[in-house]
Length: 125
Image 1 (cartoon, rainbow, N blue to C red):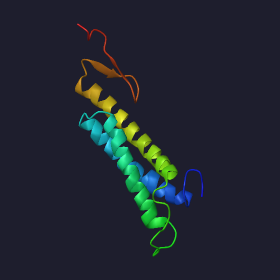
Image 2 (spheres, rainbow, N blue to C red; image 1 turned 180 degrees about the vertical axis):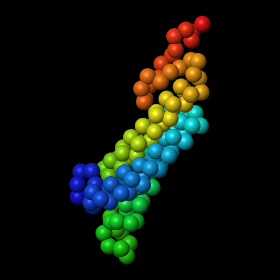
Image 3 (cartoon, helix red, strand yellow; image 1 turned 45 degrees about the vertical axis):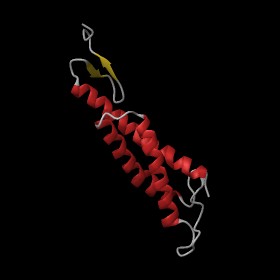
């Protein structure tokens, strides 16, 4: 048992970072494309964290045919998994939102970095 992963690093990396991170990235991007508020990123990341914990429990914890395979309700590992997923979703949300603002309103805003935009000179007329 580690501080970040429950059984092995490879399981954590494959399920949480690769599969869960991809789902979180798609979620963050979809929410930004639909102009949804950021608080929905938090809500959906928490739901993805529950699904990720279920996959950890169902696929990789302890004996395959045992009724109780591990601690599905571990608050610590749920928080770790959800934090990783929330980071992926937040980055995707902000990258998409920045590109969207600069592309949809080019006369008002310009990109100043991957996560930021600013008002153009003279747009306050």
